[in-house]
Length: 140
Image 1 (cartoon, rainbow, N blue to C red):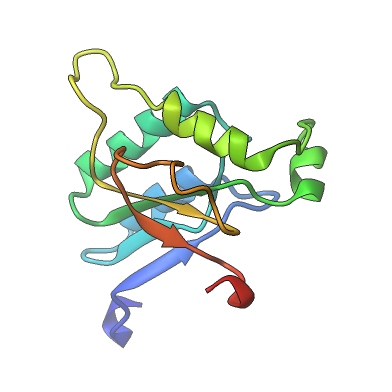
Image 2: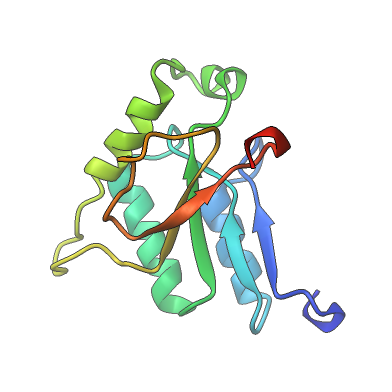
């Protein structure tokens, strides 16, 4: 893809693919390509695990990983065994619980973004976000 002039690639998290592992494989297989998750599902892992994975990829591939998190869709969340209730409360809780890892005095401020429908302005504020990435045309 890099030879074709692509500078970035966004992947998603759907049945059969785990977003952060997939991003790591793509980063490893490229030299300069920026890889982003659009989105990593907040229901698929707890905030500490999400922060640890984000930090691992951001430190291993400086400037090349963008973590996009989001609430997904009710049928996908329900199929995982979770209840799709108050999705933006869940997203805000993910940011609130995004804590520094042991030995760190602050969360990694690499690139993180919230994806999905219109989100509350407080979700992710001041926690390393670089913006909102709507994934449906009517929301852009």
